[in-house]
Length: 172
Image (cartoon, rainbow, N blue to C red; front, side, top):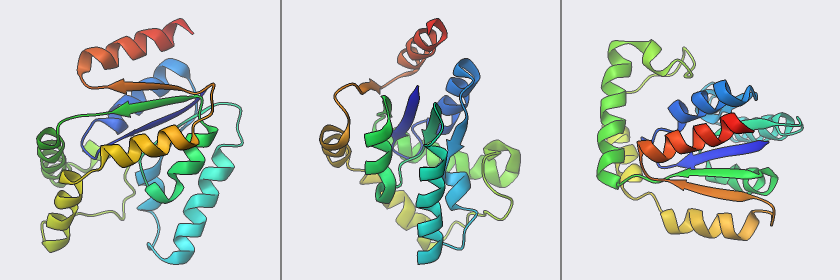
């Protein structure tokens, strides 16, 4: 299986990805971990995209994260797209809660590199605005345009649907 897990920030992608990895035993690439280990330069962006390409050469994998600049290539290579959709208020609340927890205990987001830090500043407010304005329609259009005919799309809106997905994966 080649699985991508996408959705708004704060939708639970990282947590679900780890559970899917535990069930399927597939290698997991968490894009935040990869991207936030760079200096965010144009050269880093090339490296970031190339690392995804190399990872996708494996027979099976899970890639978790959005990153629109490389989403097309992940969609076109996936045979299962798991799209987490939560209300924007929930997403913003979870992002703020996650940031506070991370500040108190770095292990809360163990996938993040040691060099990563968050500051409650103007940039953070811009990030929250980005979370609020997450464009589900654009994501849906990308999925429809670039997914293969054999690719299955599962939209998950709550915890119960996550459990159903994990149960289905256990049976495979």
